[in-house]
Amino acid sequence: MNDWLRARNILAIRPDNIGDVIMLGPALRAIKETSPGARITLLASTGGASAAPLLPWLDDVIPWRTLWQDLGHLAFDPARERQLIDTLATRRFDAALCFTSFSQSPQPPGYVCYLAGIPLRAGESKEFGGRVLTTELRGATADEEHQVERNLRLVEALGFVARDRRLAVAVAAEARTAALGLLRGVGLDPEQPFILLHPGASAEARRYPPARSGELARALLGRGWPVLVTGVEREAAIVEAVRAGAPGTRALIGGTTLGEYAALVERAALTICGNTLPLHLADAVGTPVLALYSGTDRESQWRPRATVSRLLRRPTPCYPCYRFDCPIGQPCLDLPAAEVADAAEELLRGVRLGDVAMRAGGEGRCLVQ
Image (cartoon, rainbow, N blue to C red; front, side, top):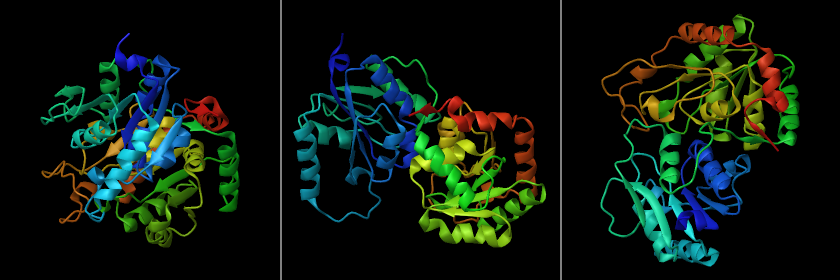
């Protein structure tokens, strides 16, 4: 047995968005199934930490806003970084796995873990980092590799065995019950199929234009499909713009836990969204998903892999741009609402609506708490 498999107090580092943490699930499951006696703690952003209850392989979570993931908003404060080192040192971790996307470096978190006295430190790196990492994968994956596979490749290189490579989340019975109440509260019959439309995204460049989302919702309503438009509080203006273009849609702005939102996605007949969190939740719970996928990222890195899905995007020479905003008017998302509605109905025709009730009853691929 190697040192990694002997480790009993493991730190997993992924201080990124909620969807990135959801995609960490198969790697966490591989660690826990290979070393069931190990305790796994997640170091995550404050947003990403909210996904912890959906990942039953985690034992603890440390929410932290890390400097190496900051986009220029944190003030100069070396004491804050020393506090992180001290926090990790007091936990006496045996090992740390620095999970990253293809564009990120594991060297900064690896150095923090070195200073915190964590003896085993692993990550996948493109740059030279000396002995910051004790196990360093170099060039093991291509830029086109799916994020889930990138995570799994790291843990498999350390000796952990992945028996299931699919996304999964644990949806609690209480969350499912709450979701029924949320649907009734906005005037939807929980026993009838509906389409969940999520027009927002953390990056403006990934958002299908709100006016067109309104046209899409109106088209779906005209074809007899109830539509639930969702968004977090900061997306209220986007949601209201969609509703203005489609009177009769129902809306839910914030007011849910992540588990309750996952239960809503689970109960939907179809989820329509961009390359953002609901896409990964739909893949995890088995809900068909229509992704209005901007040209900011490669589909191969983030697309659904298990559930029924279709991705729509106009080819553009700037793909992939990896931008948060678009200076040329989002030609990659120049998708007429009628075309999107047709694609939605094509997906729905291939899905038995009885499968929706089965998923919502906890008999699908999602885990039940």
